[in-house]
Amino acid sequence: MRRPPVVIRSPGRLTGVTVLVLASASPARRQLLAAAGIAAEVMVSGFDESTVDSPDPAALGLELARAKASAVAERLGDADALVLGCDSVLEFDGQALGKPADAAEATRRWYEMRGRSGVLHTGHCVIQLGTGKRAEAVASTTVHFAEVTDDEVAAYVSTGEPLRVAGAFTIDGLGGPFIEYIEGDHSNVVGLSLPLLRRLVGELGHRVTDFWASV
Image (cartoon, rainbow, N blue to C red):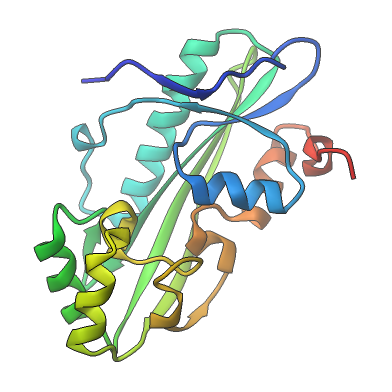
């Protein structure tokens, strides 16, 4: 079931020029685009993620990204825009881990993850409105977790941050000190692979530089 879409910032520029619309409520993704000079409007799909399931973590991330982008694309109709949907899933011990349900689950996850590694998969789907053309792919980055103590886990979970993010960790927030190192694209772990976005936008006949704000 789909909940009614929620608009965080109304896409008031969706006339006369191709714009990028981010179909995500994630502040990290918005900030990542802004830091890269990419101007994007924001519209949240309201898609109910619990309706989608897959035993393959990478496929699950892509399916969720596709569903979010499609929901926003349907709402915008023929506006001159590209809609970007993203969703991240942590693959750990062969399981797909999204956001933990509560503090107890976040704590259990960290007890299992510490000193070990997982793969963060982020599905990306870009839809060109008007033509309906779509470019999509998954970016994957291996994340090596530090051997954190019980006290550190308790302190981190008490902040509430792990409950708001896929895999129960961040690399660009309070969880950063608990990540020993990564193999792959750093921006992907934040929630959106900038190199992959460039390639997908290119497949649809655009340049990522077309979306730069004034520089």
